[in-house]
Every structure is written in structure tokens, then in C-alpha cells.
Image (cartoon, rainbow, N blue to C red; front, side, top):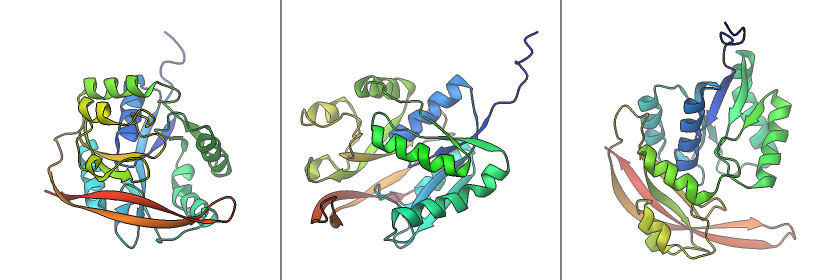
Length: 241
């Protein structure tokens, strides 16, 4: 008998946005059976009660967690938070998990090197190691795997600098990908769009929702040259039930 066969899997938490990349990353983790996922972890804008950048209502994230039968850890953040404050609040929120033996943190990142390095640096200060199941896999190949596994997802947020309003509120299928401009990543890995998964092979049942209004929001930020810039985003509201 192999002496390592009975060793427990390392405990991990899953960074969960509700979208396709985190959903597929979790699917791969469970298929490979290398980690024991203990919790989902998500951040929510305290003022709106929605997932940051995705605009998904926290009730829908909770519906996903219930269908996964995993506890959801939700960090409520102020509308405006510095990166320093954000990192500290995440560390404070995850400290009890680390104390309970969680050693790894899973992300759905695909190819953004700077983001991965930043995550790994932050995790190291908390005593955690990063796991990136989708890393460097071709975006089209990931989508084919996603569809073949039985996932379904809807686009809930669109960067108006690269895509127009018509892309928001559409199901992410092959026609959606065919309609994308050639310079847009099919997985939206550069922040071109964000999604909400409403059906998954590991959900106990699909999530029922109705589409609400599509609205536009303009955000101001200061770039590296300390110049003020604005970004336009479109959001399609999803109503639970």
C-alpha cells in the first residue's frame, strides 16, 4: 500500500466572484482532487450589496454557495477602499481560516502576470499559497471545457471602452464569442466583461433569475501619471427568483 495514499488533502479556500473563471477553477480543483476546499470567499460593496466589478447581488452569490453546499465568507467593503486597507481587511477576514489549517487560496486567473505576482505576495504575508488551475490555458480551450462540462453563464458587466451595451445581458455562448472584436479576449481576462454562472455540473439545481435593467456607470480613477481618467461600464441587473 502506498504510504502517502491516506494523507489528507491540503485545505483550501476558493476565491469566488460568481463568474465563469472561478467556477471552472473550482471544477478543475474537484476533478483533480488535490485540495479540500473548505469555503468560498467573496468581496461585496457594502453600499450596494453587490460583488465588486461584477455588480451581482449577494443573494445570488449565496444561492450559488447553497447549491455547492459550501460555506460563504463574505467581506463587506466600503465603496472606496485603498489597496492597503483592502489587503488588511482580507487578511483579518481570512486569519481564522489560516488558524484552522487552511493553507492554500484558489484563483481563476488565466494569464495576467502582474496580478498573479501581487496575489502571491499578499498571500505570503498571510501564510497562504496560491493555486491557479487555469493558468496559461488558452481562452478558447477553457470555454470549450466550460461548455462541455455543462456550465451556463450570463454576461452581467461590460467595459464600455471596448464593448458596447448590446453585449451586456447576453448568455456567453459561441455566438457571443463570434461577435467579439478580434482584440477582446474570449474569456474577458483583461476585464472586458464579467459573468454570472447560473448552471453548473456541481450545482444541486440551476439558479432561477430574471433580467432587470441594463444601466451605465462612469468611474473616475487616477492613473500612474497622476492624471484623472474615466471608465464607462454597463451592468445588467439579475433579480433572484
